[in-house]
Length: 323
Image (cartoon, rainbow, N blue to C red; front, side, top):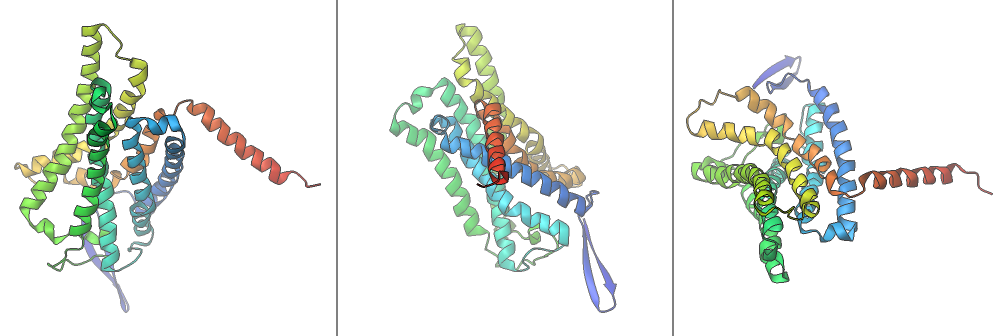
């Protein structure tokens, strides 16, 4: 990563090199196509989860609805702002306030998404093996709804509070993503360690072990009790979690493991190039997540065909001559 000055006549232009070999114009077009496809898929899945009463009542779908909303927020804010930077080599709005807003949305969508997936990995065990824990309205509120509300509000309150704190007068570099800004609170090693442990490490442990133990519990339960544990009922719930977890195994867990290694003494230059690329491709968590949720939708092929049929009918009506 380097910054250099290029001067010509009366102007001085700052050129930022982030160490990634992919040209910024290529990144722009790749992100543009990915964002459009992901946005369409996200709306499609979210529409069916919200307006299909059977899907909406499924407790295991509630966390997915919130995660899809998080993806929509990212695809309407931080990702377009990053794409603008790729295209024009400067932030869309060059003010400290905009940089703080950019940092806030990026942080809350990324960290809250990981925490929600971590909680989903735990909740699947409850819904499959301990469904009596959510058998009444009171139990559902404390076991199911309250953790979701807490995770979302925690991110909004914490990052909404600390992001504007710039009493140490950090500079803003408008040619770097999020203007290279971070709150002065991160000068405290204690807070940085707290956030790393309660966010990245805890989420990674829950996603990793929660997914693996879920598979093991299903296998052991089937063999020990010689029953299917209502496999057809829980199959989509399990496959849904595994598809989401596999996405995080590839794009989220490796950078966290590398960061943990750095904190216990591994030199910072180890994996530095990987971290650079990992930060770029971390956006594909939001891009690919809606596609992992497609398995949630029953009769997916039929629903897609119905959409195309409606589209064709609309086209025929618009083309047909009026009498």
